[in-house]
Length: 227
Image 1 (cartoon, helix red, strand yellow):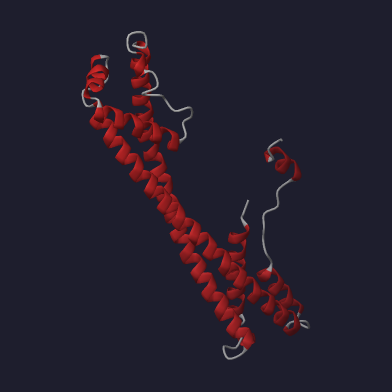
Image 2 (spheres, one colour; image 1 turned 120 degrees about the vertical axis):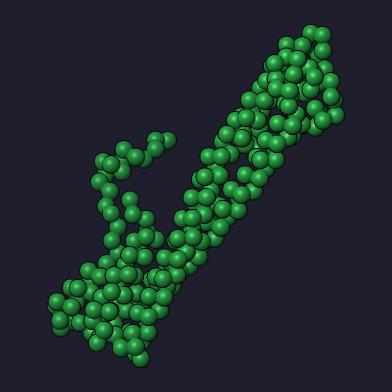
């Protein structure tokens, strides 16, 4: 469904186009023309912000995809370490809990567990040897460290892109609010100015109409989650 911001942006564009096609009614030195010029500027700013917001969103999605592979690798290593520890619980009970796998696939949980494991392995070289002896890669520690750095980097990048997108959305909302106020003024002018011209009045109403796609009640009910 077309969102309200997109619908308002289209509405502003239609009004500006209407004014351009009927420029004689919107002189630049009068409030009507000045309001149209201001609305045109707002529409241009919204289009620019929408473009940067889309770019930020695209980068955030790309980072999310890359993050998935890194966190999967961390989880794979943590499960392998925990498996070795559990296999030695009889003769080496102190290993139990050292490489506790996270209780969920949440990124913060995985990263926290990975950091804890990296600290243990960095301080106890014999545990690295044990892990390698029981099937893990020779570079298990360096690989773990590299994945931790990558995960932290991706987290930072994602936060940056999502933060930028959020700021763009807030800025667009503020511009929309300003534009709506201008539309109200223009609507008052147009309906008074074209009250005796049915053709222009109808054209104005079409141009200034806020077009939102209607959702069929059954379709809306089908997409509404149940409690």
